[in-house]
Image 1: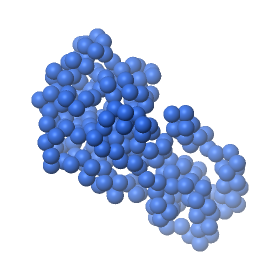
Image 2: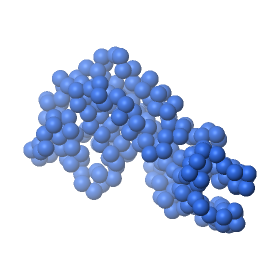
Image 3: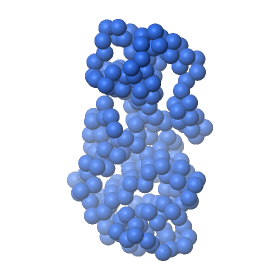
Image 4: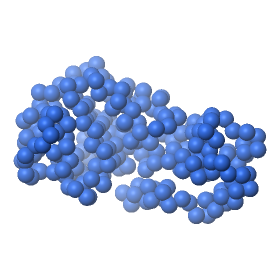
Amino acid sequence: MDLVGMDSRVNEVISCLDMGLNNVCMLGIWGMGGMGKTTIAEVVFDRIRSQFDAYSFLANVREVTEKQGLVHLQKQLLSDILFESSVDVHNIHMRISKIRQRLRARMVLIILDDVDQLEQLEALCGHSWFGSGSRIIITSRDEHLLRTYGVDKMYKVKPLTDAEALQLFCRKAFKKDQVGEDFLELSKNVVEYANGLPLAIEVFGSFLFGRSVEVWSSALGRLTENPDRRITDVLKVSFDA
């Protein structure tokens, strides 16, 4: 995991959580696909989880819901928080009751990553479900969804600055933090094209690693006309939403 530009954003998110208070706080982290929402949530999770009675990181909620359903995610949540390998409840509404019954006395940290439907939030979290001091972090491309559900706070992920973007690109394209004169202008062109999007910078940098100046010039022209599929697939989900 390359954390260029992430430290300040992680600190801002932790500040939003008001860790010293005993309320239940629900924080929404939003921004377009490829912006680093999940990476921020992962780093925050690793830094603060030891302060809670129990914790759960539910990754790729959108994709898991499509493939395995919400009951699967509810089982995982209960299993993580209760330290039980299997929890036997057969439907969503029955499981919501069990989550509330079993977890209301526990101070928990829960991450719901890549949420795109209101029913996912209704099935997996609520202010009254968890004990005092609990923190729920939800990442989503959809600002309106988070506001509709009623999160307490919102954090919009900002694009990388030019300096951060160039540093990340250099790490991927040259395996170091600085770029030589031969590649400086081309590197700046790539970074400008990526427009602060970490995913795009990482994809371009990895693709161009070890290639000649001539290949770089040709590749940059092709990327401008026909962007990498890995990037457009992620962006398409954002635009569709």
